[in-house]
Image 1 (cartoon, rainbow, N blue to C red):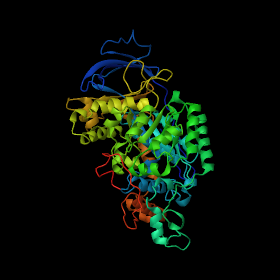
Image 2: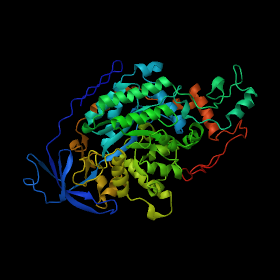
Image 3: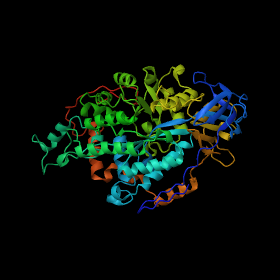
Image 4: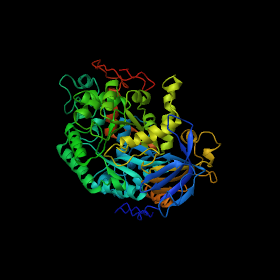
Length: 589
């Protein structure tokens, strides 16, 4: 694959992906049994043809001449383990351009730095004009980078919640994922706040008292002392930011246009309707989004209760006081194929609503820890009937797209949530259920009547989305339990150690062979990434104090989250919070 990126005009030209290869018989592969039987395996012959697992039979029983179509190639898999493809259920590909840059901050402060320092931000490639001048090719390259990293960890389907400007950004991501060959779910991430991202910061619960203490009973006015907040004349805000009706209509039009132009599930490209959050998407936008989904049969994706601050904002901003109820009341949640990123701060009633609506929570353990958001109580979610899958989140808050790392952390975290070790998950459950089957269920590929195929399993007739792993690689030795080694171990990268990942197929097409992507020149991609951003940057530039707006946002955030008692008036509504999501007392006000 040949890649070029020119920052002035934007060029991105992948060579056409090769056509699907001949049917393939994988002979004698080691296949994990059901997750309810951890540590047990069966030898299988697996025939890949017509995009599905045409035959799955006991090892050594399929005949190349009798059971396989003409032209089938045979591969000895006696030293290979087959695993169903993983789903990266929530990421933001454009974050690859800023990974490693932002200093430790909570989400509400972190996101303001992300939008400033990615290529299209005010501190981007063309300074204040970056939003207009940065070529769409930048979106294609970061999508390729994101997709390659996911693919090389056994991921066969990816949900990209893509912050985009227009249809050209969507087209660029489509272009990259189609060339790579991964099953892509592209969700243009849109909101309709009049002032972008102002509704990402909660209101100080004693805002009026703070304003009055500084400005007097009349409140803030021109010439008043500056309170340091995001409101008029530097006051603390007391009301939710307004929506922009023009943005509402433009966003609905963009989702519709993307669906009309690019939604092509048979060829691996799925357009998803992706409002940013329930707080930065108006009721009108959410209702319109639900209608577009029904019209085109689209999945939906949204951030949901990622942080304690978002749980506070739900109470402050939404009519019902609940983000989950609000999504249901607008009709968005119950449309089939709704997946919700994070879902850390759900209460029991909200969990029940999610389960009733058959919505999926996407667990993103790396970013939830890195941003201090908390830990989703997966055992409770499963017990109450909610579907849960895994996601890496964007590389700026997780630092990569390796779904084996995600599975490892997701497998280990529950062990500190309860002393009842019988409830701790096995590596088999984490990989086969959370990583694969539940992910495919979330994107409507669980094999229900009327749906196209079944993914996330290795059974006859299922979608041929799978990976094979070299049992002789250093990281897969010594011979103990290979799936546990894959999920809980490490992958040594030294020459001679062997690549644990051998091959991967998406829709029956081989997209990884010998541990390398089939359709991408990785060295060329590395060169594009090296040349696109020529200088290194210091994370100190992302401190909120370095810019007036982010400094004001930090002032309001600290007041809202009880981190800065200075100026507090005592007029603070008290709330109860779900416990055990963080190590500190969540109920502290």
